[in-house]
Image 1 (cartoon, one colour):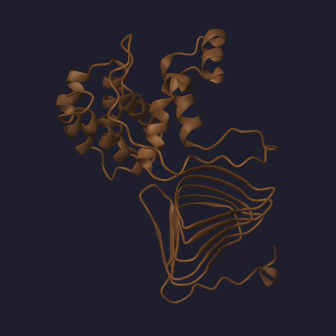
Image 2: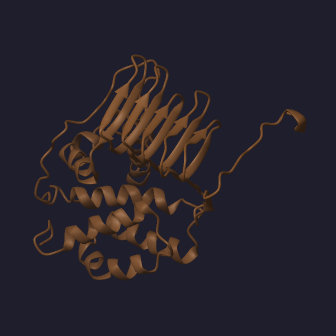
Length: 274
């Protein structure tokens, strides 16, 4: 596009634009925010207005927050959306893990995947069906045919659970969780030497985080040691050293912080290891 045809970008007074340690952009503006092009973001926030993702945009964000409505015409993949309401146009696609809204409006041809109320509900569902997740054909068949080992299986599972949905693009169903799900007591240790569910999901997440280039050598060594302890089922050493190892991870991301909380809750008195 020639310079004379390029659109003008206006940054309103009071707008904050930052880049975090992981190279993700954060945009916080006092009024309405319109995203016209695809991109990856840490946070998109409209303090007093609405956020609109236009039809040609494919947006990935950790957090999306606005005081009024989050309009989605294109595609949004987000860990958490906080808004008065979420509105999906007919051709919109949204993969939203957690949402805090008063209203949800979904067009006839739109697709919504996820929509959990909070992280406890999310991990409750994963723990309820941990056996089914491990037995998914995508993992069991590849292990039989290609001899995929446990490390590769964990990596595949992390992509499936944390990187978005793999459903058929032609599907138009809306997938939501029940509005009220009780949070159970911590799960007991799995049989046959398998990891308890909180530690299994910790391993899945850490396998993915270890590959991120944003972590330096010291942080990577600490994550690698945590992965080795989980893979080797050395839970006693993990109990004695996990706080020290997490302390060596410089500026941990939200996923690593969640793993710390999972392991902490597993080993605390009254937890699964208590």
